[in-house]
Amino acid sequence: KNEVEQSPQNLTAQEGEFITINCSYSVGISALHWLQQHPGGGIVSLFMLSSGKKKHGRLIATINIQEKHSSLHITASHPRDSAVYICAVPYSGGGADGLTFGKGTHLIIQP
Amino acid sequence: NAGVTQTPKFQVLKTGQSMTLQCAQDMNHNSMYWYRQDPGMGLRLIYYSASEGTTDKGEVPNGYNVSRLNKREFSLRLESAAPSQTSVYFCASKTAGLYNEQFFGPGTRLTVL
Image 1 (cartoon, helix red, strand yellow):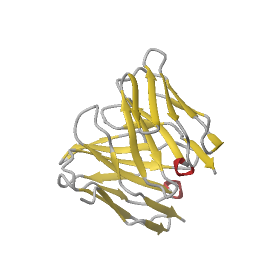
Image 2 (cartoon, rainbow over the protein chains, first blue to last red; image 1 turned 90 degrees about the vertical axis):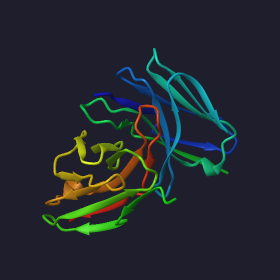
Image 3 (cartoon, rainbow over the protein chains, first blue to last red; image 1 turned 135 degrees about the vertical axis):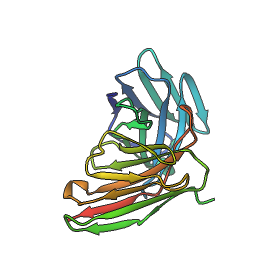
Image 4 (cartoon, rainbow over the protein chains, first blue to last red; image 1 turned 45 degrees about the vertical axis):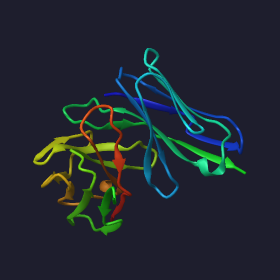
């Protein structure tokens, strides 16, 4: 089974700071997902990447397949970025498709 | 376009009671999933369905049954609820293929007393 570890578990920062959230996994994968869970509970997909880097607005995701590591960066952070950020990789436990998730990083951006 | 919908939003059960969580998607997706989310743990896959009439067990299937009666709907049934099944349940769907994102429903918060 693929183990997904995220760090830090909790992060509080000031508005405008550059944020980095890390994700490592134990088994080689073909693609990695970053998701955001809003304070109200809703989950949305931010990125899916299999190599290199992707950028969407102030969010940047990178992955190093050889090192089994990915990072999510937020530039010019804003209080509305406060959420739980979750890393996920393809489920490898059997015949089922699906995802294996990290425990999430709880981010708070203070004004 | 409602996306993925789940009913009910909240439910309280007594130990031993049964209930069915409903999920529907209007995006014509083939693949559908049930996950549970518990405090201090990541979401965990309960069951998966690749298409109508097919299902596969995920990481934590014990105590649950599922039905994929048509392309739109994927239900999760608790036959005899236990306190360990207190959780938030999320349904998700996506088009078939490894590189497609999953779309999540709003979740059902279930408490078993």
